[in-house]
Image (tube, rainbow, N blue to C red; front, side, top):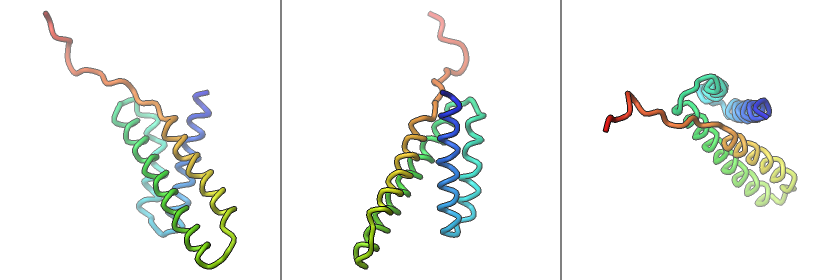
Length: 114
């Protein structure tokens, strides 16, 4: 089950990198390709960072879906297949964000003595 979560997260990051590559955002491509490496860091901040990045990526897919469907509809072109595909990619990205495990917070230092 753990490997399926990891594969889902990597696929979502690769799809986002391809999206940003098409838009010419080289910095975002690099950052998105590095994101899965946070799975190797067993700190709370790493899980939170990865989850937030994937949620933002899902929102980017949603924004793209709305914009492209609107463009296609205004031109009178077929848009349903586009909406289904981008909807599926959006769902995968949000599921990947949900699949990120966030380590519980560990208190710093020793527990207080009573």
